[in-house]
Image (cartoon, rainbow, N blue to C red; front, side, top):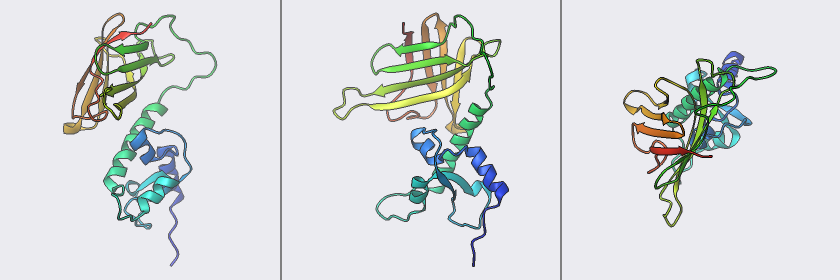
Length: 222
């Protein structure tokens, strides 16, 4: 009996939602590069073409997901669906940004953009980049950074990464929320005064890795 092909409309919907980014690559490493891959049937039933049962995976992770190794724990369906949801959420945020043609206007001086270094133990750095043309009453920033925990450990520190696009709110702050309901975590960047930044976290532990936190006071670099 021949395998029933995936309907073209559903195939297109899955590829467009993922923009050919692998859900597992993104879920594990926040890898947003374009990948060659395949659409996986998460319940291993090739006749179940429900979009909820489908995910775009790179060749390596598709093979790994379909394998039946007894030596280690394979990726679970729930795990891949969570990764897929995180990927789609971030793609939707990125692709709704305005596309600019020609010259882009930016303010001569921005009071918040720049690099910030955490004061005290455990190194951390945050960089805020103003999204062009978003400053006229709707300022948005791309926030990225790295935080370390346990820099004196013999095998090296744990490292956490943050990356998101957030809108400046009143009073001057940027809020980053992940998860839903009881599993929701909130990281808030508060601009106390010129050149100073306070970061407060609220939510479940190990959001950015074991022991890793972006909490604390930051000074603008340079």
